[in-house]
Image (cartoon, rainbow, N blue to C red):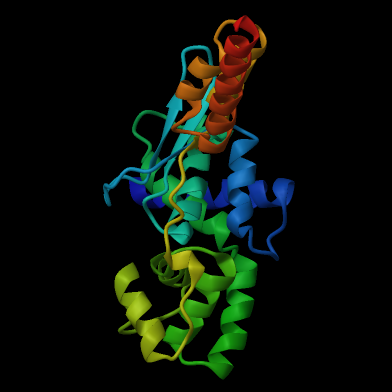
Length: 247
């Protein structure tokens, strides 16, 4: 077995275990994948205008795990990236040798947990009676909240033929228009920059008197603008009251 097929087989097997322990193979995880990811690592939401950067997994020397997700991409791409990065946190990835193809395994793992084999086959059997193949792909992509290309690739992995269907994510949006299907919120990015673990550290430093409200506001401005503004207003009010008291 070549490295690519080995990686895919291992990832598929561990994905089945993951679904059995976490949710079920008869439902789509969808956006819930980010909550699952957050339960296993510190998630950093970044906005980086680079179409080639999707995310990254980083392990601190202390053992703390961090996952970065680029919110420049559409929601459906972001959710799939979250599932991809989840592989890098899994025990399964730690068990492999240095020659193992982790990126291929991560993609297959993401596809297998976001697009479970059982529900995919059942849905395809139902949809092919009602819709043309392209419309079926779009509907499944919307139900599962994953990229259109991931749906096509997954169907092919499951032995389902899709002759002549090969589009980019942008081209799939054009296909929606041709099929008179409404636009999807999943095709749009949700610009977001959050780092909850960092925010907690700053808030603790503020509570313990290590930093004042103004310094905390400055540190939180990028990741939590509402809280930063509130702290800034509190500090301005405190200063104004102090000045009034002195006069």
